[in-house]
Amino acid sequence: MTKLSIATLIAVAMLISSGCALTQPQVESSISAPATLYESVVIDSNSRQPVSLEEISNTLSKADIIIIGEYHGHPASHLLQARLLSYLHNHNPHITLAMEQFNLDHQSDLNNYLAGKTGEAEMIEDANAWDNYRGSYRAIVEYARAHNLPVIAANAPAKTVRCIGRIGPDYLNALTENQRQQLPAQPFLDTPAYREKFIKAISGSHGSNDPAISERMANVYKAQLLRDNTMASRILQARNNHPEHPVLHLTGTFHSEENLGTVALLKERAPELSVVVLSPVFWETKDTSPSLEPQLGKGDFLYLIQPLPKEYRDRDRQNKAMKTRFSGRTETHCTSE
Image 1 (tube, rainbow, N blue to C red):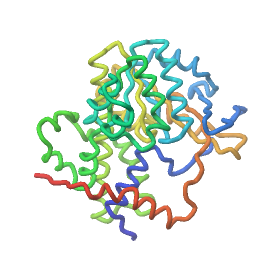
Image 2 (image 1 turned 135 degrees about the vertical axis):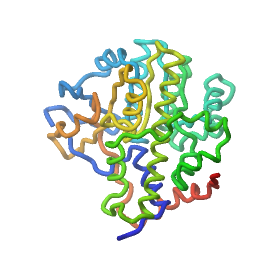
Image 3 (image 1 turned 45 degrees about the vertical axis):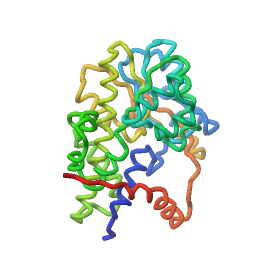
Image 4 (image 1 turned 120 degrees about the horizontal axis):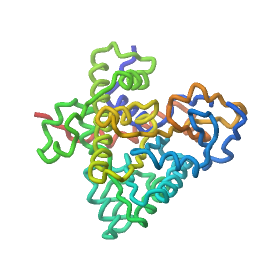
């Protein structure tokens, strides 16, 4: 059996948590396909009928928490998010925006930008914004800034996530008291269905019978759980601070589809709150009759989008690019006590 290195496991886990599809399921009916990579078609999973953003915003405005799953970097996901925020803001001027794309230890850096104390380039550097910030998230952050909407840096600190993925939960012992207090009280709260989905996605055909692989995989999964638990905790903190303010949260679709991940943890921690999930589904341009039925459980609403072009057709080049992409992260110094 081929052995998987910890770097490979972490790399695959990063791709999974980013919302990258390992498969592109086909999606039915007489619904018109999105004509460009910027367009999406929103479907009500109950009625199986298309709905406009205006119609969906009427429904979403009654929810406590709205989660839009995304494929990171997909223009249709980000255009939908920005438009939907503006519609929801028209319904409730006090909406809060929460984002997986910023880590909680950079909340003050994000606040400084929203308050006009720093420029965009400074914020991108100070807050360690994602490489695709300008193309993917600038529009929605600028809308929030222009309308004085709070923006919550919802994700766990990057170093903490990486080190837990490498050496396990004991890394939390190396954190200062202040760093530990920023994390949720139950950082690894879990659900069996999510664990099964994650292990299946990350292990693929290799299985997990090798004890070394099993231990590494367990650590990588704990890192994933820290992300989800932290995002759930940050969303609920925002709700506790402003009970009447709905929260719109942006995250990779793996964290939210099928009501798993962050969504399951929200419902575990605050079952009294209503959570509505929008999930992306790829519609291949060659498919004239998509099948919605297998996808309906992914969210209360689906939004159909064209798949992005295939990045690599040469597997060796793909592996080399992935190794280069994640090589810098292996330099992080992790110690536990």
